Image 1 (cartoon, one colour):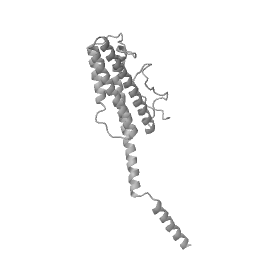
Image 2 (tube, helix red, strand yellow):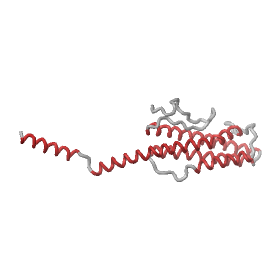
Image 3 (cartoon, one colour):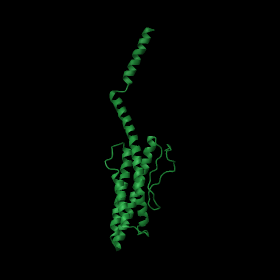
Image 4 (cartoon, helix red, strand yellow):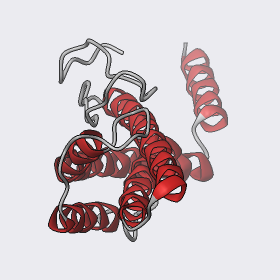
Length: 202
């Protein structure tokens, strides 16, 4: 009986020593856990930034939509120089909000970079529209068409970033977070899904 007990203890010890995680594996697991926790924090911060940025950009998008319909022709809305300058300031502040981004997990980095790119594209759209206002004839029409296409690209890019942000929030356990800019038919942008905010179903 004693020999059996000793044998069992020896065998158990051998199994433990041969199957226990190595120090490298334990360190890797710890790094993964710390990275996941850091990423969850970054996702929450990024979502808050995206909402703030969206709120800054909505007046810009709506103003450009009134002044420059999807087909690129000059709209009926009266746009003043002050309006354009306000759009420029808002778009620049939105783009600046993404300066010096932290390094995170790939999916979070993609969402952040895409939203940042969209904000910069909208700032460029405002600059192009402002330049078009100083032109006349065919040159003005060409510049307005370019600005309209830039705006459409910016809205599409933001919708891709918003979709990516929604996905990382679901994966992180925060549930659906729909941070999208207003679009109109013809913009070609992606739209949020129908899941309610905070729902954890993917």
